[in-house]
Length: 158
Image 1 (cartoon, rainbow, N blue to C red):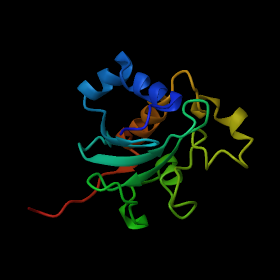
Image 2: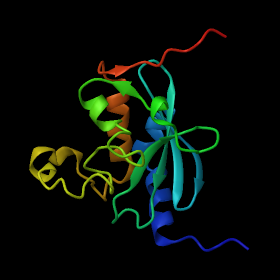
Image 3: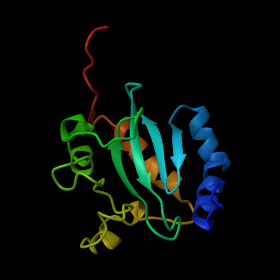
Image 4: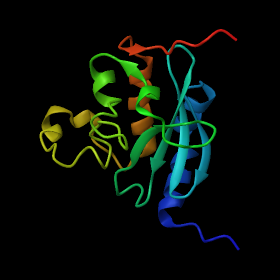
Protein backbone atom coordinates (compact mmCIF):
# COMPACT_ATOMS: atom_id res chain seq x y z
CA UNK A 1 0.00 0.00 0.00
CA UNK A 2 1.31 3.46 -0.88
CA UNK A 3 2.09 5.90 1.91
CA UNK A 4 -0.19 8.92 2.03
CA UNK A 5 1.14 12.04 0.34
CA UNK A 6 2.58 14.48 2.85
CA UNK A 7 1.84 18.20 2.85
CA UNK A 8 5.44 18.81 1.72
CA UNK A 9 5.11 16.46 -1.26
CA UNK A 10 1.75 17.94 -2.18
CA UNK A 11 3.26 21.46 -2.12
CA UNK A 12 6.17 20.36 -4.31
CA UNK A 13 3.91 18.66 -6.84
CA UNK A 14 1.68 21.75 -6.95
CA UNK A 15 4.74 23.90 -7.67
CA UNK A 16 5.82 21.47 -10.39
CA UNK A 17 2.41 21.83 -12.03
CA UNK A 18 2.45 25.63 -12.02
CA UNK A 19 2.47 27.33 -15.42
CA UNK A 20 5.93 28.88 -14.89
CA UNK A 21 7.44 25.46 -14.07
CA UNK A 22 5.69 23.80 -17.01
CA UNK A 23 6.69 26.60 -19.40
CA UNK A 24 10.33 25.98 -18.48
CA UNK A 25 9.80 22.27 -19.19
CA UNK A 26 8.30 23.08 -22.61
CA UNK A 27 11.19 25.44 -23.35
CA UNK A 28 13.67 22.69 -22.45
CA UNK A 29 15.20 24.51 -19.47
CA UNK A 30 14.56 21.62 -17.06
CA UNK A 31 12.57 18.43 -16.53
CA UNK A 32 11.74 16.14 -13.65
CA UNK A 33 13.54 12.82 -13.96
CA UNK A 34 11.97 11.06 -10.98
CA UNK A 35 10.38 11.67 -7.61
CA UNK A 36 10.86 9.29 -4.70
CA UNK A 37 9.70 11.51 -1.91
CA UNK A 38 11.42 13.38 -0.27
CA UNK A 39 13.91 13.18 -3.16
CA UNK A 40 13.40 14.67 -6.62
CA UNK A 41 15.92 14.34 -9.43
CA UNK A 42 15.65 17.18 -11.93
CA UNK A 43 17.70 17.74 -15.09
CA UNK A 44 18.67 21.31 -16.02
CA UNK A 45 19.85 22.15 -19.53
CA UNK A 46 23.08 24.10 -20.07
CA UNK A 47 23.74 26.51 -22.93
CA UNK A 48 25.47 23.75 -24.94
CA UNK A 49 22.36 21.55 -24.69
CA UNK A 50 23.85 19.16 -22.14
CA UNK A 51 21.56 18.18 -19.29
CA UNK A 52 22.91 18.25 -15.76
CA UNK A 53 20.95 16.24 -13.20
CA UNK A 54 20.52 17.41 -9.63
CA UNK A 55 19.24 15.46 -6.66
CA UNK A 56 17.07 17.62 -4.41
CA UNK A 57 16.38 16.74 -0.79
CA UNK A 58 12.93 18.24 -0.14
CA UNK A 59 11.69 17.17 3.28
CA UNK A 60 9.87 20.05 4.94
CA UNK A 61 9.21 21.70 1.56
CA UNK A 62 8.64 24.58 1.01
CA UNK A 63 9.14 25.98 4.52
CA UNK A 64 12.53 24.28 4.82
CA UNK A 65 15.19 25.08 2.26
CA UNK A 66 16.01 22.29 -0.17
CA UNK A 67 19.44 20.79 -0.64
CA UNK A 68 20.82 19.95 -4.09
CA UNK A 69 23.87 18.27 -5.53
CA UNK A 70 24.79 17.05 -9.02
CA UNK A 71 23.88 13.44 -9.70
CA UNK A 72 23.90 10.84 -12.45
CA UNK A 73 20.74 11.32 -14.53
CA UNK A 74 20.16 7.59 -14.88
CA UNK A 75 20.78 6.42 -11.35
CA UNK A 76 20.59 9.49 -9.12
CA UNK A 77 23.97 8.55 -7.64
CA UNK A 78 26.22 11.38 -6.54
CA UNK A 79 28.69 12.56 -9.18
CA UNK A 80 32.37 12.41 -8.32
CA UNK A 81 34.01 15.85 -8.02
CA UNK A 82 35.51 15.55 -11.51
CA UNK A 83 32.01 15.16 -12.92
CA UNK A 84 30.57 18.42 -11.56
CA UNK A 85 29.90 21.40 -13.86
CA UNK A 86 32.99 23.51 -14.48
CA UNK A 87 33.49 27.20 -15.00
CA UNK A 88 34.88 30.43 -13.62
CA UNK A 89 33.59 33.07 -11.22
CA UNK A 90 30.15 32.31 -9.77
CA UNK A 91 29.93 28.99 -11.64
CA UNK A 92 33.16 27.76 -10.05
CA UNK A 93 32.02 28.98 -6.63
CA UNK A 94 28.56 27.37 -6.76
CA UNK A 95 29.62 24.03 -8.26
CA UNK A 96 32.46 23.47 -5.82
CA UNK A 97 32.61 19.90 -4.45
CA UNK A 98 35.78 20.89 -2.56
CA UNK A 99 33.63 23.09 -0.35
CA UNK A 100 30.96 20.43 0.24
CA UNK A 101 30.32 17.47 -2.09
CA UNK A 102 26.71 17.31 -0.84
CA UNK A 103 25.56 20.84 -1.68
CA UNK A 104 25.69 23.73 -4.08
CA UNK A 105 27.21 26.89 -2.63
CA UNK A 106 24.05 28.98 -2.83
CA UNK A 107 22.00 30.99 -0.32
CA UNK A 108 18.92 28.93 -1.25
CA UNK A 109 20.55 25.63 -0.19
CA UNK A 110 19.95 24.32 3.33
CA UNK A 111 23.54 23.11 3.76
CA UNK A 112 25.14 26.26 2.36
CA UNK A 113 23.19 28.99 4.16
CA UNK A 114 24.23 28.26 7.77
CA UNK A 115 27.27 30.34 8.69
CA UNK A 116 26.74 32.75 5.82
CA UNK A 117 24.52 35.36 7.47
CA UNK A 118 26.08 38.05 5.29
CA UNK A 119 24.26 36.50 2.29
CA UNK A 120 21.05 38.00 3.66
CA UNK A 121 22.40 41.44 2.68
CA UNK A 122 24.86 40.64 -0.11
CA UNK A 123 22.69 38.19 -2.11
CA UNK A 124 19.03 38.67 -1.13
CA UNK A 125 17.92 37.73 -4.66
CA UNK A 126 19.37 34.23 -4.14
CA UNK A 127 17.71 33.50 -0.79
CA UNK A 128 15.08 30.77 -0.62
CA UNK A 129 11.57 32.00 -1.36
CA UNK A 130 9.00 29.42 -0.21
CA UNK A 131 6.17 30.96 -2.25
CA UNK A 132 8.17 30.53 -5.46
CA UNK A 133 9.67 27.24 -4.31
CA UNK A 134 11.75 24.92 -6.45
CA UNK A 135 11.33 27.14 -9.50
CA UNK A 136 13.56 29.76 -7.89
CA UNK A 137 16.37 27.26 -7.23
CA UNK A 138 16.09 25.82 -10.76
CA UNK A 139 16.17 29.29 -12.32
CA UNK A 140 19.43 30.03 -10.50
CA UNK A 141 21.02 26.76 -11.66
CA UNK A 142 19.80 27.30 -15.23
CA UNK A 143 21.15 30.85 -15.28
CA UNK A 144 24.58 29.63 -14.15
CA UNK A 145 24.72 26.75 -16.64
CA UNK A 146 23.57 29.10 -19.43
CA UNK A 147 26.16 31.77 -18.65
CA UNK A 148 29.42 32.35 -20.47
CA UNK A 149 31.14 31.51 -17.16
CA UNK A 150 30.11 27.85 -17.56
CA UNK A 151 32.60 25.74 -19.47
CA UNK A 152 30.79 23.25 -21.68
CA UNK A 153 31.77 19.65 -21.10
CA UNK A 154 33.99 18.12 -23.76
CA UNK A 155 32.46 14.97 -25.13
CA UNK A 156 34.30 12.14 -26.81
CA UNK A 157 33.44 11.32 -30.42
CA UNK A 158 30.79 8.64 -30.83
